[in-house]
Image (cartoon, rainbow, N blue to C red):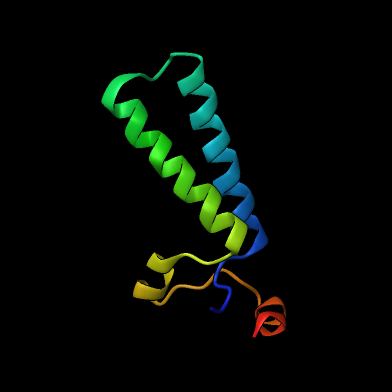
Length: 73
């Protein structure tokens, strides 16, 4: 599996996931919306950890530099 996410993209996703988790655990977002957003946050963290986003593959996007992409091959 080739990397297709750059460092900036990964950091942004982790910040968004942390913000969603903070809002959820402080009961600012609750109910069904809270659960759905927590699932998105979990997906953001998972894709950030493995540096691969399946949606990027579908759309042909790549935010990873060629230098770090070649190291993973």
